[in-house]
Image (cartoon, rainbow, N blue to C red):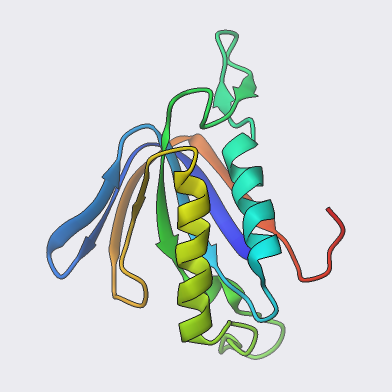
Length: 150
């Protein structure tokens, strides 16, 4: 599983000309589900994202989590994060999870997050236009491979 997160002051997702999800202060998360991912990886990643201290405290140090700042999360499914570009010029998507299972795990991920924060989403498998204001800029790549130790 790979997730790219950005600290944002606002973000929205549009499908077919209509905004289907938007947040103010919080995290924009691009979520890639890979073959072998299970609910264990999903829970690990959700906990990591919810508790990662990427928001500034009163001294402008990254000491606060999205929970601490009462932020929200905009979660966007993005199978291209499961790609590998080791040779050639065409991305290899062979590590991406089957769409049916990926959708189930993506929805589970959003349910786990929503136990702690408000979560807005895009539409799984749809062509989406994402708008965001990256606050910082602050961007991180978080990975959890099947079988990785904590």
